[in-house]
Length: 198
Ligand code: ZN
Image 1: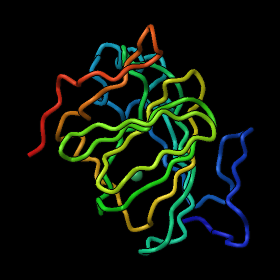
Image 2: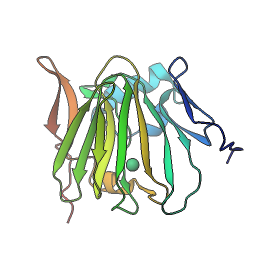
Image 3: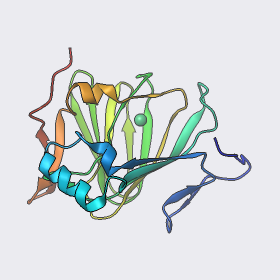
């Protein structure tokens, strides 16, 4: 962990889209997202264009501690684009302590908070600047960028939550995917690969 000066605020600079006084940055490259999108040819093309090290999204966080009762907060910055018919998205997760909730506040851009219960019930919140998405306990969640600029959200969640990524991989994605829709900009479609959890 970097040195943290707790006397300083964690500042969002809209010019550089980064969190000042952060304790860490997590970057996800295009090369690390293999298997996330259904259209493998479109993914290969993206990989070719952006390069394996091309940045798909990053998360700047301020993590005061991992203690129960503490709050991790920061910025998620998801670059725009489509892979085949699907809008770009984060890998998504369920909290390892699944009863831990989360808040996302949209700072800029246009996106979705796509949520799903373990039993497979989908819930989606569309976000524009100023909007807030509440992710209830026991919700699998991911961000989707349906706009044409960076989708930037400020998140906050209990510091002892942890992340479970396997739950999405094991069901071969979330139940719904967000695709390009000529009429409304975006639409949710059933993911044909989805495996119902027991
Ligand atoms: Zn989360």
